[in-house]
Structure formats: C-alpha cells, structure tokens
Length: 196
Image 1 (tube, rainbow, N blue to C red):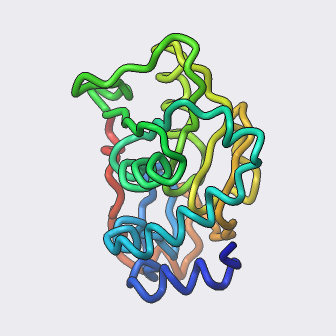
Image 2: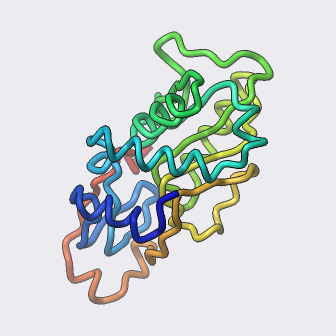
C-alpha cells in the first residue's frame, strides 16, 4: 500500500500538484490544486494509485461491489481504473442542465451494489450528487472511494469513504480570501461550470 508521501510523490512527479490561486469545483478558493488528470494520464501511475486505493477498501465491501459509478469529468478515469482493478463494470454520470445523469446507454440494475468513485473530495458536493443519481437509478451505494480526501474526513457522504490519502489544503469563500491569495489572479482548472 502506498504511503501518504508516496502518493504525493506520484502527483509531484506528474506535475499534478499546482501552486497559485485556484477556484475549486466547489466554488471555494485555494492556493494549491491537485490536477488528477495529470497523474492519471500515465497508465502505470493510475494502476499503482488505484491498486493501493483498492487495498484500502475493506474486503467485505470489495466482495459486494457490482458496479463502479463516477461523476464526470474528474471521476471517469479513476472510476474506470477502479472497475478494472475490482473486475466489475465502470460507468459515469454526466452533468446535463446542472444535474448528474446517466447517458450513453449506461444503466444501473435495480438493487445493484455500487461503489461511487471520485478523484478528489473537497466538500463532497459532486459525490453526494452522484450518489443521489445512483439512488434515482435504483442502485444502492455501499461505499465511496477517492484518491485524495481534501475534507480531512469532514465530508459526509452518507456512506463510508475510503481515501488513498488525505491532504489538508485550506479553502476559502470568495469573500473571505487571505490577502496573499487575493493578490494573485484566480484560475479555474476544474471541469464544473460554477454558474450551473
């Protein structure tokens, strides 16, 4: 199993741990940003990270998983890789008119036991939206997993959350920025349109 430092080493080596002023998908602002797409673009890194994440999920839960579901965009690659590691199908929800829905012929069988997989959990908003979509489709979310838990265990998803590692990076509302962060122009590297 990879240690915290080994996980961050993978992100640093891939140029996926950025410094500056970032607007997160949650709308909060931060001085550091984890660009998971950069670390997951390398198949061997994705394999190592997700193999270690799989090991963090209890054996009892792993044995029950019928399917993996993720929110697009950030969860697609990590969700696929977790499905591959677990030997189950992997599907993803897409945002349509501000709501996460299944498209592309994806379905969840009624009562199917689902592992919801994300790249990063900060406030848990995307995760909770994806879990709501799973319920709407008739599935049962038995657990959630992510590469990095930025909430330090504070995000309540209503199911157990297994994280590869946790990383405390302060995040601030736009109207409460510290002066050193406010002095830097903000960029929004995530995939969610904050106006929807």
